[in-house]
Amino acid sequence: MSETPLKPFRLRVNGEQHDLTVPAHRTLLEVLREDLRLTGTKHGCDLGECGACTVLVDGVPRLSCITLAAQVAGREVTTIEGLAPPGALHPLQESFASLGAAQCGYCTPGMIITAAALLDEEPDPDLDRIRDALAGNMCRCTGYIKILEAVRLAAPGSADREASR
Image (cartoon, rainbow, N blue to C red; front, side, top):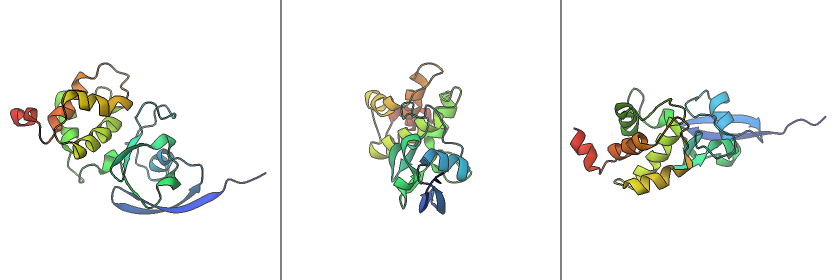
């Protein structure tokens, strides 16, 4: 009977360095949720189709359920827990809460992580651009109108944000 080979590596998550030794086939999602106890990243489809498991790797959205943890060794991983400083909310978290865009909340971490990458790259996206960016994130509750409005409200360059103050 063969044993699963273990792979030692370093992983930087939310600014904290972790030395891990896990089976080589272990996904980033499994390591985040089961080894590091960062359960904000959700386990959705396991196929890379729903976006619930989205995290940032060096600032770029990545589906953690289809990414091997060892593939991101030495890189910076940001989960929903690390998006804002401890005790604070990211503007996207504030806008999702204020507009009721979270609905059941299961898809929300992936939506917010994907939207954060969009807003970092493009501070004032229009609704079509927001729709394009979130196209890989599914919400099974209902429509996307409040989600789109929440992203627009959180956009640093948005006139909607200024009007809501």
